[in-house]
Length: 178
Length: 214
Image (cartoon, rainbow over all chains, first blue to last red; front, side, top):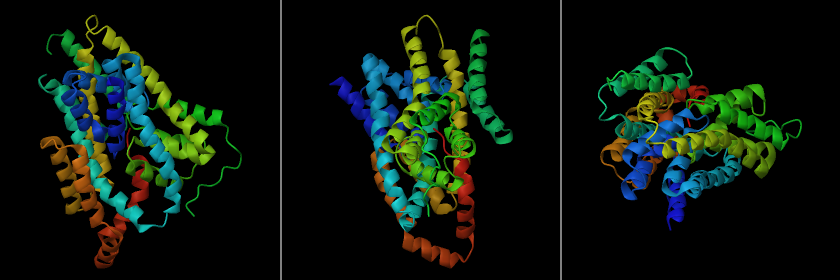
């Protein structure tokens, strides 16, 4: 049944999201765009972008993917699937964590998973680049490069850069150069 | 010794919900963890910096989002299971309302309003933000050639070879953790004699407080 599939896919993604939400974006795209397919690659990119405009964790956008699959029930099950299993795990692990405070494996796991997480987040960036930026000329790449350069030089709330990117492409579309 | 300082008074569930709801409503742009520290350590003083960093380490190691894992961890410490529930709900509720409202409006009016040009720039800026976040997170975490190889192998496996994520995790995580297993770590530290290993560890706590993203 479709609703069960929505819940199942997002629960699985939630438990694979080691290193945060961005780490699981390529796998999420593979399941929602490639396997089912529930939405198009373009919609996936647009829904991810929408998530940037809301406050809080930007992966709340999984609710919008669920909405596209099965309306409000789909939205609810996508959100429950993505947040309940990992939440329960965090709850259980919080207890165990303190008991293992002095265990040397704690440091070993953190140390080993760190570099893997970096690779996963970078792969997440590339999957969004493929879904959002490709095929629209050089402007999207100029915006991304400008954001990297600005964040490397000044302290600024990233939301202003996100909003600025949206305004830049909107103006470019109005001016007929996009 | 790693216990959080027991809060002097019993903190009300309503107060926990309110604090996390405010966080969920005001943390724009992905860096929820920085907002978390400001609110929990500096403003409310529910945690000390050390407990915060320990919680963050756990939140990053576990699957799921750092922000929701942290709210479960902190809520649980303050008021047990009900605390964890209200903290997590508070963190998620504002963003859920906004993103669902936007998502449904766009989905139902896709033809009427052409928002695709706005979303193109928003997504492009978000990719820039992710690249910058990756770079910042990598500083304290990727310290030697082995770490670079692990990060690169993970990236190539997921992004170029498009291997299933569980497969990549099952192959790479044991290799990476195995390399730093307690015995090997002790031997390496002894061999390096106060070199790279010790210095890197000392810098860990400070860096951790500022990293992580939703």
